[in-house]
Amino acid sequence: MELTDFLALVHPAIAVFFVFPLIGMVVNFAWQTRQRRLQSKNGGKSKIPPVVGGEHKKLGDWLTGSVVGVTLLGLAYAIGKNIIKNQVFSKAPFQVIFILLMFVATIVSLVLLYRATNKLWRGTFATLTGAGLIILGFQDGVFRRDSEWYWSHYYIGIAAAMLMIFSLAIVPEIYKDKSHRWRVIHTILNCVALLLFIGQGMTGTRDLLEIPLSWQEPYVYKCDFVNKTCPTPNPQLPK
Image (cartoon, rainbow, N blue to C red; front, side):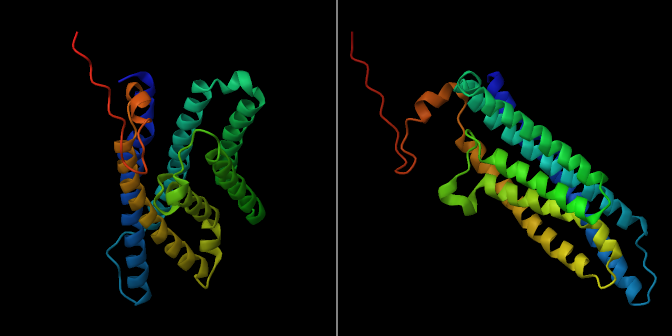
């Protein structure tokens, strides 16, 4: 395994040993928070400690940053590999500079989203963070599987990241809204996000099986992926 193959494993490795366990903890605390709220609403005394709500929010904040971060890592690998392989910096240096600035701008926007308290600024930084992910996602080198967008690791991942960004942006509104409308929206969207994360696990595993090692690429990419055939090597003639 060469260095480029090892770097390809950084994105899925972080997702497996950090992001997905974090998803499990967030879901667990979300369920406990809801159960405690329902028990208290019915007039009973809940045995679930009140700290579950705060822990859910704290881990939820971590989850948003982790999802956006692991998405940026995956995009950085694909875009960086294309830049090096096709020598884009010597052919279009301004394009490379633009891509680097977009990575920086997306990260800065996410950091400012965490710090923003005003509704307008939270909406602005959430929009900028999401826009940064989309712009980077449509750079050369990113495998999007456009013909099967509904089963694409890229599109499902971007959709999940967008929901996480939106969930982070509306957190203050959840606590202010006495009608619980934002809480219901938050719950529905995060249930959808959970389904998307399950899809990410399945499509990510599939893509790892399909991506060849660097030394295998010259032969594998000669295959016809539509008809599922590969060229037959010429038999060596006896000397």
